[in-house]
Image (tube, rainbow over all chains, first blue to last red; front, side, top):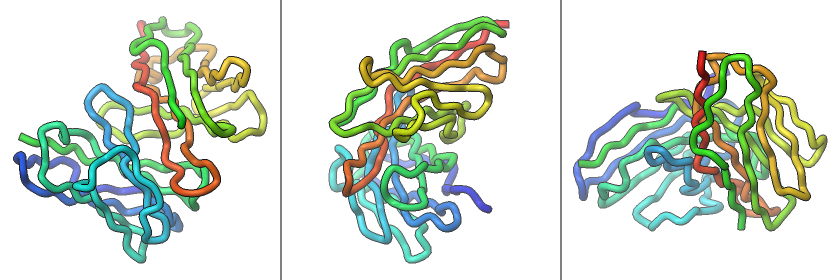
Length: 113
Length: 116
């Protein structure tokens, strides 16, 4: 059984650019959540996708957007990058919506210069 | 709304000593609570979870946690620390309230240091 994978591992962007991060869910999982973890902080919930629909969002602006595909893989898109967007972005998948265990990927480290 | 407070950003214990990491929560619904561990440059690994069954929850690597509703606490313990336990530990509460997303609200984390 393959776990949650994310790509790329690291990337560097400049302020104002756009970035797309990718996540492959664990086999059989239809729910994907994205989190932002700033240095020295706990992860913060960005949004969740359930069966290709966004079903909840944390306190993040609309320039953070996402997609979930029929195979339940997912993308996180961030437009108009700001310096404060520098963080570790974590993807987590779960079997179904509703308080099930979330399995985390290793994350993508984004640096905005 | 849900929130989590972890007391102590850094905790240092000697190898073989008791580990106690503190977590207090606030939740508008009966909570589901989780402890995760994060090693450097890695994602999060679930240690244990409370889902309204037994109040004493046993997890991996010898860790356990006790849910105390009256104290709104879910402290993590391990009887004897190993060097390999050195990591960042996060307490989290589920946001799920019967509909919508079941994202997690995390505490700020506690860095566990093991002294030889």
